[in-house]
Length: 236
Ligand code: ATP
Image (tube, rainbow, N blue to C red; front, side, top):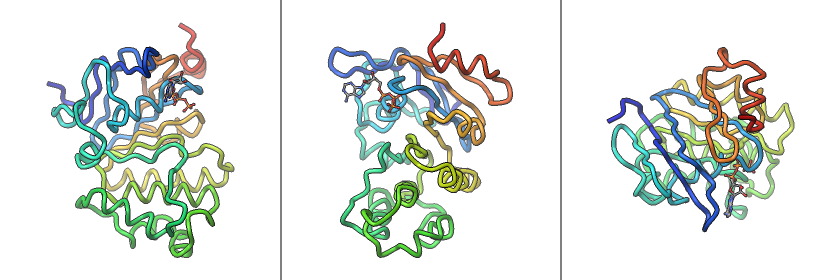
């Protein structure tokens, strides 16, 4: 059995007859931040959906602390402590900021540092807007709520799917400033990103995906720009 906190071996996934993932091997150590980069359609979101039990896997396996989790459905994976910030944020638009955050705490009452108070310290603007409906928020504020909602379950692993998508650079900087603070409490993090620069800044290790396969893996300081470019565009 593996020694890694979270491990994926030989994973495949399909949408009907269409194969989206081909033999994915990856791992995440406890407390580590890993970035998953790749162009549109590379399979990053599918991999995240497989990890959260939304997409059923074809073959291969996923383990958390050596225990198989690939047969579990989404609510049980969350109960194991793997929480997602989904692409597109998916807030409940008619609920307030605070109500959206509390939904995260209902989904899993995990022990840990995150509660309304600590989240409002992490994102002070959310405290000011706590009674505003989701629809009244800017894109960046919505993203903070989506991250906060996932953190309210006090996850052991936080999966962030394209949290910078469609946001202005200054807002992206604010949101990414939270990552080291989340890491500091021991949470393992996967950030899925099309923005390579952003990914390299926060990650301990980077995976690149193209056409449903992992095409590169390494620490940011050991990967050349050329190697990343080739892996990103699927040059074999
Ligand atoms: P993006 O940045 O656009 O989210 P991605 O790297 O996350 O890209 P995926 O969304 O995982 O890529 O898509 C991988 C492949 O699976 C693509 O070819 C996509 O068209 C296909 N795909 C994704 N979702 C579905 C679905 N629900 N049904 C059928 N095919 C899908």
